[in-house]
Image (cartoon, rainbow, N blue to C red):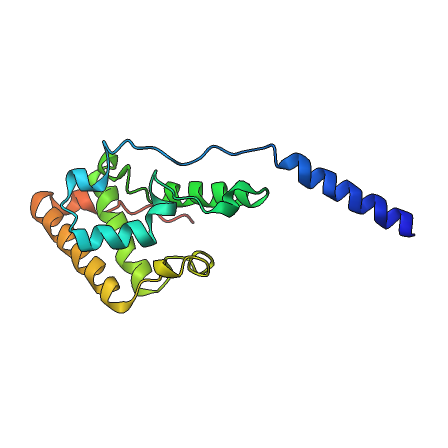
Length: 168
């Protein structure tokens, strides 16, 4: 019985050692061509909040902690960042259609109001990323002003997502 546990333990150590050679691609682009700040004015106060609380998962500029070099954490972080960027990527925001921009801006206010973002799993380690009520108000006011400016420029029906027909 002891020999079996010893073999299993050695096997796990070997597997853990081998997976350390796999390194997922890092999210480190300096291309700011389509950044949200290229289309909309982003006050310094808002930019600071976004960089501290959002950009690691919702931009092309992730700041990786030391533990991102250890597998399987590196793969988990890579997957998490990719999911975040699929949902909203501030570095690609200007490339979105106006309808999608308007919708994503509305979602920002919603997730802040519901305290869904930043994720608690992120703020557990990144305590400076916790958004307080003042920061929430600053970002929400900015987003609402952007949405109002979009309403003034685009026809109302171009900013709404089309309703899908109901299935029977």
